[in-house]
Image 1 (cartoon, rainbow, N blue to C red):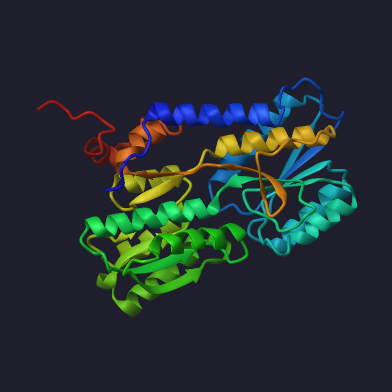
Image 2 (cartoon, one colour):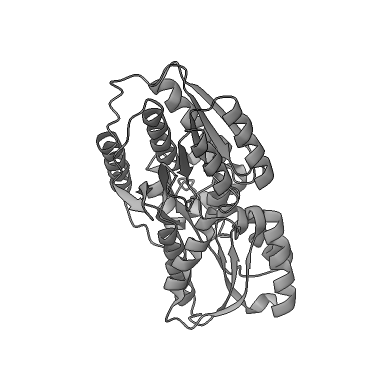
Amino acid sequence: MIRATRRASRVRALLGVVAALAATTLALGGCAPAEEGATIVFLMPDATTERWESIDRTTMEHVVEQRCATCTFRYANAREDSLTQREQAESFLADGADVLVLTAVDGASALSIVAEATSRGVPVIAYDRFLASPDVAFYVSFDPRRVGRIQGDALVAELAERGEPDGGILLVGGAATDPNAVNMRAGLDAALSGTHHRVLAETDVPGWSPDLARDWVADQLARVGTENVAGVWAANDALAAGAISALLAAGADPLPVVTGQDAELSAVQRIVAGQQTMTVYKAIAQQARTAAEIAVLISRGDSPVAPSRVDGVPAVLLTPTGVGRDAIASVLVGGGVLAVDDICTPTFALACTDAGLLPRSNP
């Protein structure tokens, strides 16, 4: 079983420390107003992952409004199309954008966006996904290698507990164009190093598409035999959803170990129900707040001081946390991330009782 690594109080304390660090290190006192009429733009990569629209965008917009009453916050979603994202960026730059917060669809092609913005004197904040350019003004994310390592360690530990120290696994990675996917895989490889697990097949899923993940996993189950798959490394919760859909359709019983990332509500419900083994919780709202604060500072000509650097780019890297079934109450509910009422709908009431999220009825 995946054990809780932090109690609720420690999670709250950690988030408080991160918030305080951001406030102190980045000089976020709000003492000076942002440049009059500054336009801050957030370019999102896809509509597949819940977080971009529901957490990242809404949080950034709120912070910009709070920190700079005269600023304008604009946004666009490229829906997994790098050409569309470039066109969106060019349109915003032509309209006078002052800062771009960019989560790239394709890390390589997005470098042209950075170059164009730089030529116009517009700073670019690489958000969540690293962009390998010295012209990037700031990078705000979680350590993707650490995410992959957490997933890999959980996968190996759960398979050992199930008595399958050499079980075959499928690797369902994110888009090859996303630098985070590459670094997560490096973290996974470190966790698997020295074990006897057999990689039965692996893929990088374009656009992190759950439908493509489902189809690929279904093909592999038909090829190697469902009974021979002991685990599935799914790089995020959307890919996990696709993989689990294929496993259920193939009649897998019991379900293999399946990892994930993002602590999406649907994923947490799958964990409660015993379909998904774990996810990786990232304080996405804190990440979005930090990026928005930095964007406002940069828009007024300030140079935020970064606690670290990645390939020479000033960076803030937040810490992810692995969450299994027995850590939902302490980390996610206790930490104020999700409410029991949201998780424990009637469909999941019995499973929530078994997981200790709901009290047992008196006989």
